[in-house]
Image (cartoon, rainbow, N blue to C red):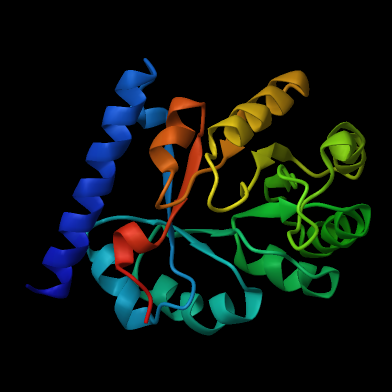
Length: 223
């Protein structure tokens, strides 16, 4: 099997699962965006998926993305790149220059750094507030109780907040956490929900996900 065929089959399988989940939720699958998570994948690993026509990708680290995506963007038009991992304030300017959306806005200091970077580069990019939905000390994200105040601060700084993002605790049913994020978004007047990964994106779609972050199901297991 060629790399192109493998990428195509994986993409088709994920899209079929997306369509099925959306139908069960009485939603249209066109309302769900598939972010192909290409962290730790080389440019050669990514090209077959780009060759299928897929153009929306996500990376976890600014430095890793900066090493491979400028070259890939020279080869392929209309690539949209999202940062889905934690962002250090000192990397805010690099992130604003490289990415088209940021899913990990989670603290006042990062609001300040991003607003400064956007002003300096004259580039406004949408951000998702990351919520520590399972209240796990080892994970990034703002506390549930802080969502409204962080949203207010971001908007006051001129940042377009597109929605909320979460990573539920592992090895438990993610559905209650997805439902809680959906409620938080509704309570705060936000339309977009970045939630759901390879193992649970169908559940996320049924509970309102507008952006799912899928890596393994598209690229295969990591080495």
